[in-house]
Image 1 (cartoon, helix red, strand yellow):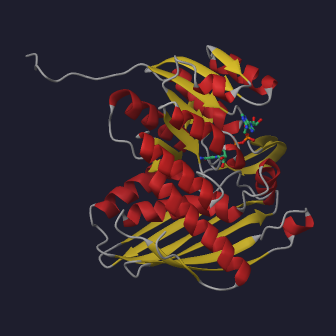
Image 2: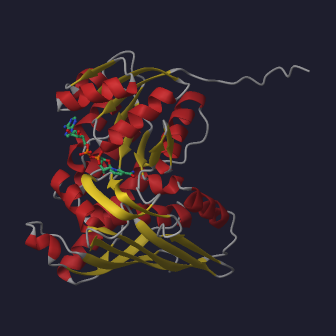
Image 3: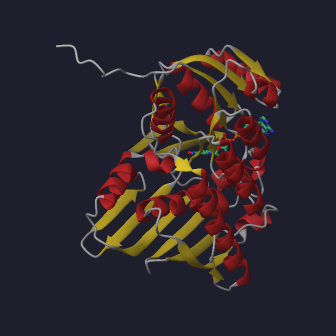
Length: 367
Ligand SMILES: NC(=O)c1ccc[n+]([C@@H]2O[C@H](COP(=O)([O-])OP(=O)(O)OC[C@H]3O[C@@H](n4cnc5c(N)ncnc54)[C@H](O)[C@@H]3O)[C@@H](O)[C@H]2O)c1
């Protein structure tokens, strides 16, 4: 029996990836494997980097001119995978061209830029999404779904904490000195808890303390450890703690996370430390963030973005990129962070940085 009216709507997509580093490479290779993508161009300020990625991803072309890529008439959607302080101009150009955008987190590093981009996207009716890819790990996505169905009852609060090595943090700071552990990493957990609490709940106050000598000795004015707390409009309280200064030989090569949510009727405990998958090898395991580093003992699966194995990518960037392309092609529901959500998360992390510096609570009225 043929059912009339049931038609699959699948738009073919032209994709531009701006920034051909770690994330841009994942995104472009994934786009080239996606059945709805029929045209792909990649770019970077470093021509060599763009050319290499074009070859690996079998792209139709490459450029060092971001605006040429974004305004290419065969391009329908744009992925911006440049460093944290280089998002604004490409996102703005894509919005002005009326093309949907996926930009890496955080949306911006200042509230002025965050406001400007989220307002512009709203004015122009452009779908702007931010790659808070932690949402797309199965354990977090399913927990969010259970919380949304009310299984925990009203949320009382909880804790999140994330560890990584100083080796990885120094690579991030070299890429962008303003990308501090709070603005660049805790931001994932602030996004996730905000997503779980829902659109009607807002953060109202932030407190924080920090301490650090390791990164300061390397010339970066950044704390090694930050302990922060947020109170929400329902009264729920969450702590968001981070130490990205573990010794370089510690076996994680990405985020090691604990996340716990308490409700009146239930609790969710997520162990994302990766201690369930250990490899030891005399030949070493590569740290994607610092490819020259070879670890003998490694938590397999700890690479935050995910893992390529024999031509297939597993993990959060794979699932996130696929869902974004699926939704662009079919119009299916998209679970990526909206510009409004990302702007609120940015305000919380900036308040955490301020509270840590001043030692005073920071109210978040009218954010
Ligand atoms: N979701 C995740 O799991 C995840 C993981 C890592 C990084 N990120 C985010 O992805 C972004 C990029 O991080 P990365 O690790 O890929 O960095 P990277 O340094 O590996 O790559 C960035 C690339 O952008 C290029 N570039 C710099 N300025 C540019 C410009 N103005 N125009 C075009 N190209 C430019 C650089 O030459 C480099 O090749 C950051 O926002 C970061 O926070 C997300």
